[in-house]
Length: 262
Image (cartoon, rainbow, N blue to C red; front, side, top):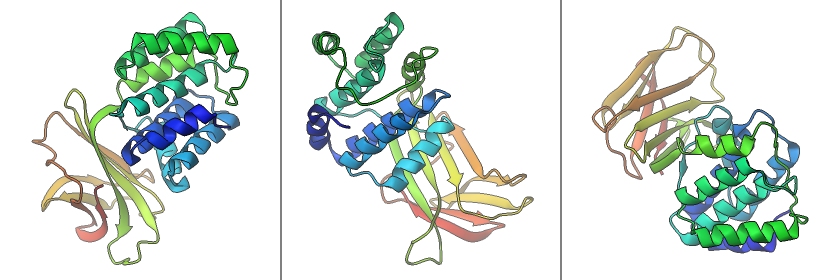
């Protein structure tokens, strides 16, 4: 399913860049309302080549469906070119690239700092081969690629940390109960997204989140939905995070779940 070019570029990426590129694939797949089987298979193939676990892919896909997936721009030229190349493949499934698709790809190229020379060369190559060897499908109805690239600008982050949540008494950490993602966008917006899974908590219970000995949020559960988002314009509302910081979730004031940011 993956071409030799994609595989070669995958191998050049750092672990963090690999995670970002798989997140990008999930973003492309789940931004539109129609998800095709071959789209999912392609994203899974990229994740496998990148060494990203199935559990991580499922978590990314879950966030992408709810428009909560944050993506950090790759730093290296190889990783940025690969991300651009994957979007180009998605646009060429029907063996033609219309004006909206080309404009979307060129906007993405500018965001990724891909030179116009490379953009033109890739478009020319794609046109000459008619994308005959591309083994990936995408929904072309309604300019879905254009919409995906447009929405992507809101999901770029300058800083991103994630903590998987485990029951605080579970030393083996075999079962996770969700995750907390901290992100700071390129324009300085702060967001802490809390996504519980595999938990059974009745309504009218109070959940609080403690970071660096400070309760940064508290809310009352009123339905089965256990997702919560905290947003702030600066670090005044959410303490500055670094890799290795721990976070604690309390239920009715009692220690419940814990996680470490990576």
